[in-house]
Image 1 (cartoon, rainbow, N blue to C red):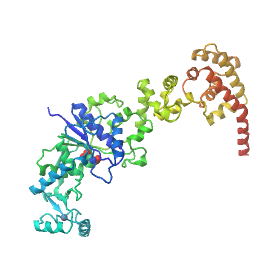
Image 2 (image 1 turned 90 degrees about the horizontal axis):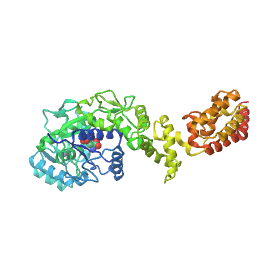
Image 3 (image 1 turned 120 degrees about the vertical axis):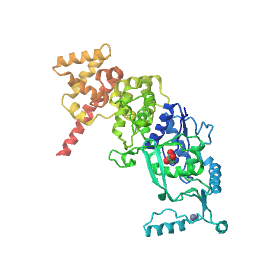
Image 4 (image 1 turned 135 degrees about the vertical axis):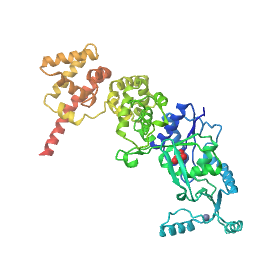
Length: 501
Ligand code: GLU
Ligand code: ZN
């Protein structure tokens, strides 16, 4: 069987976008599914817009997603170099061959002349493509133009008649009339290749068997096919994956929120969840399961289950999936994932102590059901690490503002100091017993306690929370709440009263 070779070929002109990540992922999945090779090639011939920072960014995002390449930057490979800017001689050589064969020619038109031509075409209601002015220059013309200081580009001679057919594995047969494809530039006057040209030279040189890329490249494909033909190369298979739209069915853009992989990472999405989510943008497994571990996705991935219709990027669904992963992955893994976020927010120092790690593990275990992102997880465990929280406003109104609040907090304090063994069960029993003695419902003790200990009105089971905080910390916090209720709150309430008068 033929060995599959696929590639991801980003232009380093910005961060890795989720659309690019989806393309990379599909190629990677196809390589891993078939036991083939996944190549990473950096298309950096646009010297104005390409940056090293973007290269680094793309590499770090791919690595974070776990999309490892078999050939490419950092690791090399037998078809390198994998940066187009280091392959310029290939493009020049092949362009010369095409010129020698008469399949390409030098064009000396200046930008102004080309603009004037386009303008004329517009006025006459014709398509604004290049008209082929330099197609039949004589040697003498060329010498003269060169002597006048004109720097030529190289254009491919495109047949005026006939059609070029893209036989796409996903979209089927797509036919393009050649008369809409003008003699396009393959080498610019500065010697740099254009995208369509460099892409063909490299895909052939690197023995790529399947070209899987975004649908927006479908219109480039007939030009590339003409190049394959002119060069006498065998065609690879093409597979154009469907577009990704925002939920309002417009093009996904910044105004819909995060669009780069890095942003999702910083907002506390797990790479496993993002990969799972991206795998379903245009591909679907046979079953109905959506949450799928990567090895299952690899096993089930196939090109014939890639859709033609656009996929919708629904962040709500991604967030739901992420919550699912936060709940279900091994606890130690989530702790490792959330640790840098805890450090970023200053709840844990740069060097986490064993005690901090233990507290983090236990508090994550208690609360992870309540978080859909790692940022949310930081929020729901934060009060285990710091008592410097504010009491939630609506909780204060409900549980601290009544006349009996201080008495209740005193009662709880006594209870906390007197309970013999400080564990959930003993605490729960004592709470119930004390409530009964006082003619209260247990909730009348529980709610104020939770607010005093965590600043919040909702959270994990109170007795588990208390056990984890420990007796001393509970007493400190109850004392703080009591002070607040006795010393600060009356003044606040009086001020509020005045304000509404
Ligand atoms: N450099 C192109 C891009 O980033 C590659 C397209 C392709 O895969 O052929 O869009
Ligand atoms: Zn010309």
